[in-house]
Amino acid sequence: MNLLRKILFPFAILYGFITSIRNFLFDKGILKSTSFDVPVIAVGNLSVGGTGKTPQIEYLIRLLSDNYRVATLSRGYKRKSEGFVLADSASNAEILGDEPFQFYQKFPNIQVAVDADRTNGITQLLSQKTKPEIILLDDAYQHRKVKAGFYILLTAFDDLYADDFMLPTGNLRESRSGANRANIVVVTKCPKNLSDEKQEEIRLKLELNYSQQIYFTFIDYDDAVYNKEEGIAVSQIELESKLLLAGIAKPKPFFDYLKNENDECLIFPDHHHFSEADLNDIKNKAQNKKIITTEKDYVRLKGSGLISQLYYLPIKSSFINYRQNFDASVLEYVNNSFEK
Image 1 (cartoon, rainbow, N blue to C red):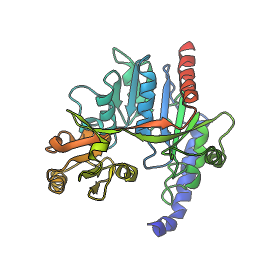
Image 2: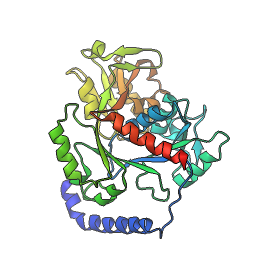
Image 3: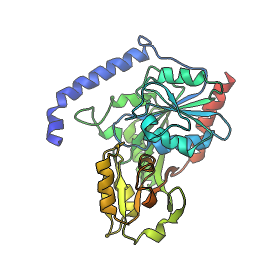
């Protein structure tokens, strides 16, 4: 694969040129971006692959939803529906996509919508009888037809955009200069004990401008696993033989947190829709053992025949330091938006 990616280097140059022209046209107003009268916060990345967008969106929901009517708008990756869909009691992961359905399940006080056309999606949300006061755009950094008021760019600690290259040679969706649109850059999936010296090294490598802020977060795993009826402390099952299952972009940290030498690990593609054959294979491998999966996979599996032995491990995004500064910046943008 590495050799193939190197062979495709000319196509990466061409792709980079095309995306740069597109960004230039949007920057100059030649291609139209639509702005809205409500605060719109876009969360995304420059690269393909997992940078922790879902826990970052959930962090923002917790920060904002007690005081404001919040809506999330996602594309609804791999959903089987089309167009604009507003989540309701009839929704499931196939209709919404796994991550939006997870938002709907966890945060019943917010509106959750999906639409590949973010401009139409926001317009539809604002036409609801109870319209949101804040809209969070999930994975919309390159969706330039909407001009968000605030951009949060994520980059993973072990896969910084500064070390990457354009598709198909690398994993970047657009050139590194796209980071200039960000109000805040969050380096995700850091070690908990990341030193001040290493933080400064990364800060210099990313070459942010004077107006941009940078923060460092880590994935904080819960100390218990859950199903619809109970929670069990991780310490109670750490030595127990179990089946660990993940269909996410980078499952290694999940496995590392739970795995012992007697456990079996099953890996599926990110956003995988489990077939009957998959479910039978999982059941045969698990036998009567507990099946521990990620929260995102759980929302796709909980309607299956595995539910009696299926548990999920919640995660959240936690800041290494300066969390209050991050919160203050987001709230300042929101409050200033209402004052205009």
